[in-house]
Amino acid sequence: MLEVSRLRKVYGADPQAAPAIEEVSFEVADREFLCILGSSGCGKSTLLKCLSGLIPASSGEIRLNGEPVTGPPEDMAFVFQDYSRSLLPWMTVAGNVSFPLRYKGLSKREAQAATDEALDAVSLAGMHKRFPWQLSGGMQQRVAIARALAYRPKILLMDEPFASLDAQTRSGLEDLLLDIWRRFEVTVLFITHDIDEAVYLADRVLVLEAPAKVGLDVTVPLPRPRDQLTTKALPEFAELRGRLFSAIQGAPVAR
Image (cartoon, rainbow, N blue to C red; front, top):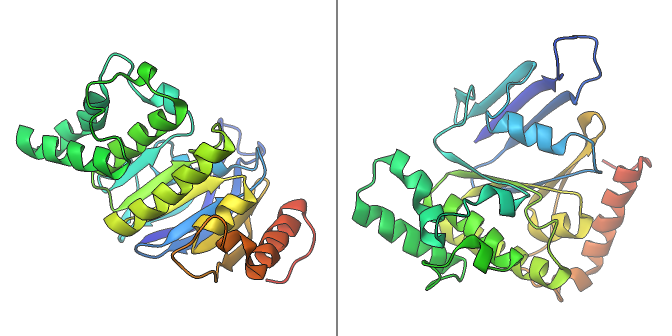
């Protein structure tokens, strides 16, 4: 579904400047859940912004369903890390979720149905008239996810969406995201620096080395559906976690 070939990004006009992305190539299958893992500052967010068309790559190519990405694609939605800044505080929950739908040419009834379905999917039914500042951090992030879902994207990009949440809220949203992924049959690219989160969520994990280049590409063999207690107690979970940790630390690992 998504093809990334020899992608490189250098900020500024100096071609000799240190690259934010050195050279990245990978593919993502339709309906795959791919986690991109790496330490802070390795170029994960820059990569996602290039993939979404928000910033241009310096060289290389990105194709979505065979078409070059030269700007934000219509079939793609983006959930940002800072949910408090991505929501419009003067709009209600329903207003925030339905805001992008005006660009899809939906009727008022269709937009309302899409908004209702998305809010129900993130367990926020009945919160339509609340404002973002009246909600907890976890609920605000669910509004941001609902806004992306209402748009009905074929591919969903998520930039460390749970990083600023407490552990209990985070684990609950991880399970919610897996439910949404199955229900809406969407392809997910999920950026994180949390190894446990990557192993728990993904079909496949890419480890980025700085400056961003793929250091390791591994399939996650854990059975689905997954459970926070049962899955994380599996010996395969611990083995894969250790392998990814070694890769991030720069230790040699089996590929």
